[in-house]
Length: 457
Image 1 (cartoon, rainbow, N blue to C red):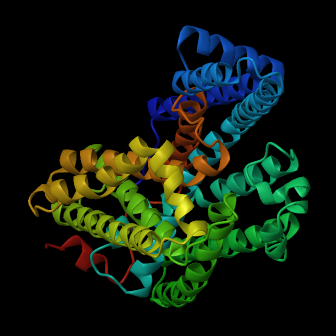
Image 2: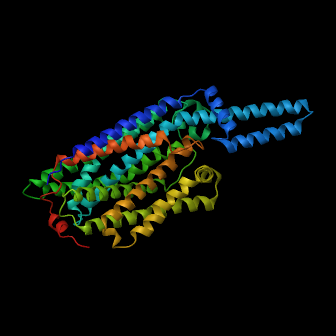
Image 3: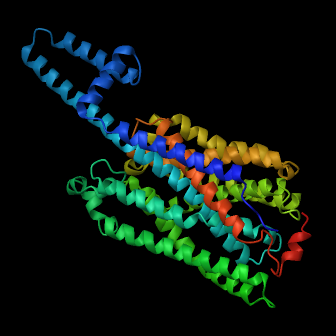
């Protein structure tokens, strides 16, 4: 059955991209403030009790106490005033740097979020072939459509990372700034790995491997439709098994490079698995949502509630797996109480408490309560509702990974973040649904297609 993207859906995707581009452009233009402009802005916010009122109030009280204690002591007063000026300068510089970095961080978070959906689906697709799963062949073309975004999405993420590094002091990755590295012995010790040229080469190797698997698996899948034997299926089986080995190594290194290195002083041996769990649950959630959408349009008529149930079951299972890894990483670091490790969570508890704890609720508590019941997994609107919350929760998870190390306590959900989401959501929708029009939605000669058509849980 052929799928034709509707004009309404295509127009929606284009509008989202245009609005996103305008919002992102506005964010970059308005972020480039000078020291004097930021100083004036903070003074106005302090005067009107807005913005960093608590910090301003703290500074005011500190100033009052300083004047009270140093009255009549000229030397002490001079020293206190000098220290206060230094603190004020540091604070203004901190806010100015955060404002310059925020658009880069916002667009990077959104770019990575949509890219990881496509990469997670690619891994799940490979698992179906390597396991010779009988329930999923009716869904394989949906997965192929989603993975079409992997290549452009990955190149965009890598491009943003390198471009932000080339701007120097205001880049996302501090180890890309030679001035910072020159005064940081810890980063100097990692310079063999954290090198911008080697960073780019590694990224291109990862992307090339992922794309080659996607290209040939898709080619063999379409060729199988008109074949007289199962040679193409067997080829896909073999390359899928090999790809999964390659994927597990490269996904871990990608997570170190593209996310963990934004804070090069911190590391976690569980981080690659943690990112993988979020990637898989997001990918499977999008498979379920697009499948339900296509079925509601009269397409994929052979997909039944058992297929939806199994997708929701994977959503639930990977949500629990993600929680296990989150708790393992958090508990081990908290219990060991090593300063260079625990600082990662201290920053998130102090400055990101709402998104940090809210993310855990959306990614664990909500799926646990909503998707545990087997009957609810068969209800399309229920799965869609759960999927939306899960996707929002994992966007916030990526937000929590990137923002504290880039913009510090100057975070917000505003024009840069929302416009970045709209931009990449529009691009994702356009590429994925265009890819779905390139081949029949139901594979014809997959050796397990009959099993999938009659699948019942």
